[in-house]
Image 1: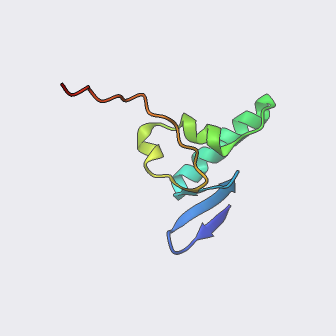
Image 2: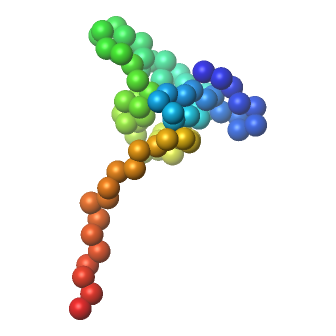
Amino acid sequence: MVYNPKSSLYEIEEHGIVYGLPLELTRLLNDFSRGDTFVGGDPLIASWYKSLDKGNKKLVTRTGNIPEYKSDFYPDPEY
């Protein structure tokens, strides 16, 4: 984890994706990884990001090779 003074975020890179976290979320990440290693799992930042609520997800910046998922949205047909 590296502190970026320009963005004032802590950056961590995993699988080509750079996650930018404010200080409060680094503490949540630490708690998450501590719990995963205690159970015997391998803590991944992607799984931590998926477990965040909507408000905290907005605080995390992601750049890099982010996979795109197809939307389930289909517009109404026009007649």
